[in-house]
Amino acid sequence: MIMQKSKPSPSALALCIVLTSASGPDIARASAPQLQDAAGNYGITGASRVHFSVAQVGGGGIVGDFGKFSGNFRIDGNNISRSSVEFTLYPDSVETGESRVEDFLKSSAVFDSATYRTVTFRSTSITQTGPDSAAVEGTLTARGKTRKERFSVKLTDWNSRSISFMIRGSIFRSPYGMAVGTPIYSNVVEFDMNIKGQKH
Image (spheres, one colour):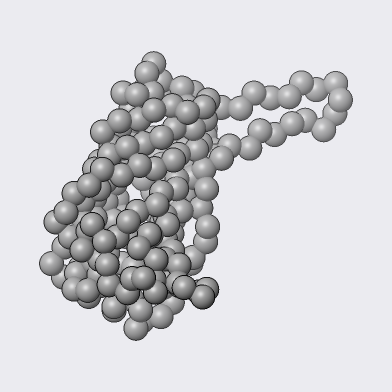
């Protein structure tokens, strides 16, 4: 199912889980949920946020969100390395708050969204780096070019039906044919994503 966000606003994203401690001295501290606790299949919901930024020499740059995306992921509670992620972005949904910048990003100089309607990521390996964190490697395809990329993932919230992650990654844009504006604009796109999933 494709999720459409009506009015995403830029914000930084990170993946961490907060352990809540009881205020009373005689109450034991609760244990934090771990990745194994959250085993199951999930669909990514429209409450997620996909934020990006491209730095500019001298300060400023381009920041924005993608309002349309879809995907799912599976967490294997017995072996995290057997988990999987699939995610799709729709470049035509990019929003920066400036129509001129949005039109440029959609144009053939950058995403060429009229020709390449999606950017996809599919995991090839997942390595647990802590009880609530993992490194996800996979293939990212944009403008018809596919490369291996890596993202860091942290669990932020979980219950029996839903889950939240913060995901970060740094992607070089020139290998995907999007080098326009360098070196004034950084060759690196920083992704900060707050991904929420609903259990199937």
